[in-house]
Length: 362
Image 1 (cartoon, rainbow, N blue to C red):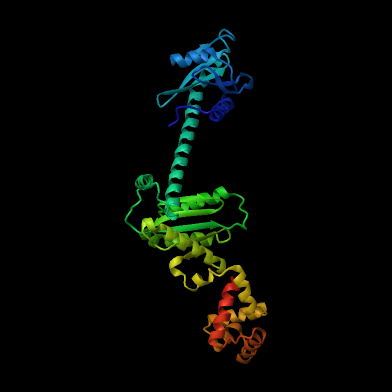
Image 2: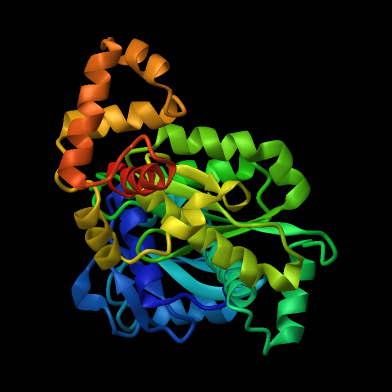
């Protein structure tokens, strides 16, 4: 609740009222000092009638300039909010002309104050949510009492399993309107019944969702990732108890990293198999491995291998899919063997080529 107005809000108030009534506006502290004014020369000066209006709690009108210290003709309206006297709004001009603006000025001021209160409340709530999620995913529960009170405030069930959902906005993409994307993400979270979520600069959203809700809402995340495939990736960690969510977060990070070697943009940790191994290979080791396997092959040969392995190494099925004679396919496979010294028709060699294709192809 606001009980005191800072200079920035005071300036916003006087400028907004000025736009409506086209008269100079003064924002006067209960002490009589003008905190903000559309007439910059009056800021910091003493306004005697403003002080009297604050002391009496009554609207005071001045019909002539300079009858009181630092005062011009106009109306001076005490401003109350939640029974607190915050300030006096002074509208400069002949009272008969500006009287009609007094109520409007009061309404505008209360709306701006209420807006700031809501913003402050939203920030406080966002700060609490950030604290809860960061405490859980980092396994930092030093302030257990405050953490527990926040969990109760947000009605988080302490006894059910939950997952971490990790959304990362791609760094290489330039987003012209980040706020629109963030709004879409928040709307998606609401649709999926996400418990809590927070934002980590520069482009990570971390959300907490109940396991039973995720089972029902999984398709929402998958569809959102598909619709925004050129902007972001989404990874979901494994289900854990509330105070083991740091392991769900770690698994979500692993799943997210697996997307760097995949053409997909959405992944659930539970579905990872080979990707768990591939995602741990450093870029240097990837480069070294490719140099020892498929580096000599051209694009057509790499595509041939991709089809060949997707058809379970069947010569007949591969020939039909690529519209090649079986002998031609045999010749091309022989050419691949000569180039990289690995025979695609032998199981162990085929595994090496398959892994190389997985690493390079994505």
